[in-house]
Length: 168
Image (cartoon, rainbow, N blue to C red):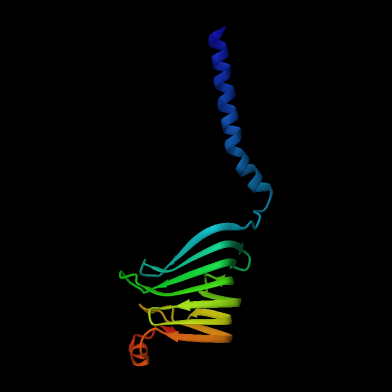
């Protein structure tokens, strides 16, 4: 009698485990995936050379799979130099942003705080894009619409002698 109970208990446990494993597949097959927000996330993007090009962090994000865009609240985007050196080239921060990862563009209607080793820029209403995808060291363009302030950390001759990777 005890042997039979153990056998049924084992079969019952096995069937329950298989059923619980199948529930996600059953529910995914019948209903579309919701566009639920993601919280406190970090998303790296790698270049063709295999090294990290930029690193996106956000407080909250909403991904629209149909349009390929990511709405981010509390955005922090760090851009790195190409290759193994992985030096921080620029940091972009904004309370609100819309990113298009496939085309490597971003925009926002709020303020943007851009910090590089040589200068800091603050402005309202902005667009950022990678303008040269195929080179070893891509170039980036930042367009600010209003209330723009620039603070140089070096003398101007040193700033303009640096390799130009970021265009304002």
